[in-house]
Length: 321
Image 1 (cartoon, rainbow, N blue to C red):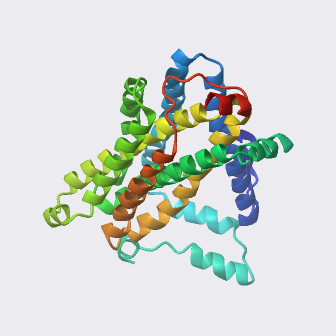
Image 2 (image 1 turned 135 degrees about the vertical axis):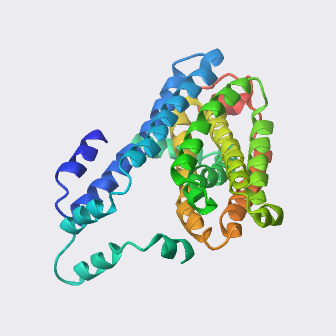
């Protein structure tokens, strides 16, 4: 991941090399967090499972917190970025015409208004009825959480609030979620997830409610956005640990990866909904709230895992159930 990232900065002589390297960067990055989290949890006993999981989340959020600071230090350099992009696009032919259209920056007003082991473990997961039911339910839940967790911060610019401060507040808000998650170590997983997804949905839908819109209080909108994002972050923390408790060691890494992919699938809709939110809050925050609430009810199809001992094989897991 690091080597490809460095190459993207050094040898991106045209847009095709840049795109290919960015694709590889995402490909290599996709499994790093999942493998690290699973490895940490498997290295410790039940007593420390939540603690080391939270530590991994803290490191992730620290990186997230660096982004608005980096963006703020490099703000206002659109012309320099445009010159760099123009230098790597084709200069002749149909591609040049397309590239020139893509590189036309709209004004802010216009923009605002207008291997075998892997596959064998997958086979084991989908080879038993109880496992299929379990992975399906948890992936549906992850889809709704991922849509809000990754998508909601993208819509901060639609709230008439300082975008740098808004993103920084969203990043900072992840830190207290780890404290909350730690305090919930002895709580039921299903109740915790249902509570967080429901509250996140309610706060999100209030953003497009008539009272908030009529008051046009930007600070109140930001508070509701932060409250919804906070609950989604807590749900994201809990579901990753919950997933590792739902599946045995032989398929745990694959199951967690599938859940992460379901979250990323939900994230795909985030930019689209954030863009539509420029026209109407109902098309962004209304959808965010409705989806995470509906997906949250999939916990009804999952067993409670609080206080359980992790199993090693599918047969052990099935016999324990």
